[in-house]
Image (tube, rainbow, N blue to C red; front, side, top):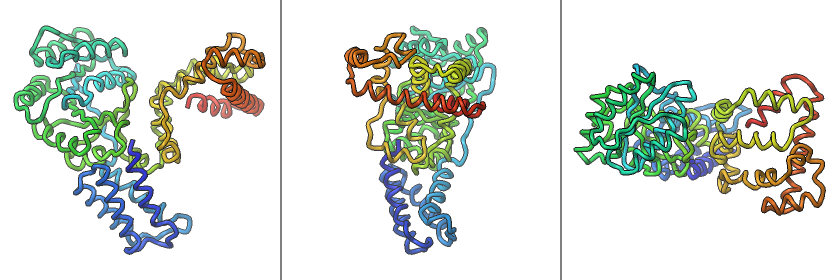
Length: 443
């Protein structure tokens, strides 16, 4: 996400490299390039102008410390202003009531139903008992889609396929939730155009009847500035509580994320990437600003690792490391943990400095498949004791996995190197070394 914007901002800030201090002359061209980069990224022009004016005012007159270059100083200023533009701090979802009701609204094709499943997954991980209510009575496959998602994530779905009254279905779902100890009801509604008065009145009626604790507007970030304009119209009719940006992994510009808060004056609460049910993040303006500027987002990376962390598995791995018994089966389990954390390129982009390095690379979740194929082509004895794998076995493994002998050799070399490092850390002793190694395995 944000590849084009990140690249152009990086280019603009490089103009100050080699300068002794920030002056009105050398900052003018840089700010002009930053404004152009924001507008090219589909940021509202007025918003882009306002934020670059603030950047100029903040930058002029700043003393450049001996240990900090003008470029580094401006990066900090731009990061702070972008974070402020996107809301400054994260805004939590409001979950109150028995049950709490969350109303999902948005345009057709914005990803509401998928987001409903993702939000349900997130709340379930937090220990909440969730019910999904299928209230899209117009799209033929909507109810079936939500049922499939519900089954996939282990959350019950309330539906009345023959009923064509969305308000009635939602009200019955809330009654069902009360009777079945469900603490949160997420109401998935039909997509609607802002110009369709009949459909807009229906969503207004739903909000009035349900009195939800949270009303979210889901918008496809790939629609760019149109997303901002649509959000404004919806807010005038619905007065929603927060915005959700979906399909952010498919948008290299990201203008909607930057300008929507300023134009609509409603917080961005979640961002969604990919189709996996765990591909959802709480929106943190400061972290997003840092990612846009190629500074990474280590905090979010650690949080994702913690969400998918299995304490029992960690203890088991620690014991095997202590006994120098870490095997290919254990390695395979660690790969599965990494895959659960989300899109691989997105994860790598959270590592400081990696964003620029991987921006032109095609990295996807299939990247692990050759490694998995090689390991799964080994016998149980070979996975437990890789030293058994001689030349003939390597050839058999390569043929069985559809890879080359060189790829098998490379994996064995890397695995042996990792085991040697673990052995060294084991000799060092101490829980810190083992804990660090275990975190490395998880991340």
